[in-house]
Image 1 (tube, rainbow, N blue to C red):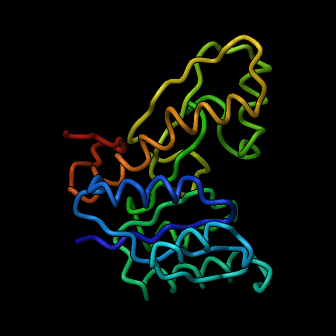
Image 2 (cartoon, one colour; image 1 turned 30 degrees about the horizontal axis):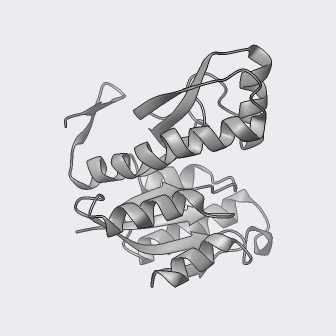
Length: 208
């Protein structure tokens, strides 16, 4: 059984999707063993506690810089024997120390179809504002491995979602979460935990 550590900063809706998937037996050979938050008041911590999952608060403001915070995070993840690290609304920057400690063992869900609307500055509602400003007819979500390059790691899964006339950033965000993020993130976790993802020539190849 693989140990899954989930990193959070806010409400934890993606964490809840993972918890619900695990309860349905849909995370394969994986179990959420701890939730680590960069903020002490993140509601995601309550979701974890309500489901008997260990919580750790590693406050960003307690550390002088990104390097010292990243070192502490890497050490914490190692101490928790994490086999897979999942970013679930984790809004704090980590440096290469963590990626190097967990190569191709960290995944993130991004609320757009990478390589569109991704990279530095594209997070939260900013992603959906940019998509609507461009007039795209399809958006969606991408699960990818976390590397040093922001949103640049190998793509594991993607799911498209229709952009509708009259959409606001908020309505589009909600539809993408419900129709894409909450579905493909747990599935990607299952694929990883069941050893169904292989890296070939820098690309993630999924065998289902």
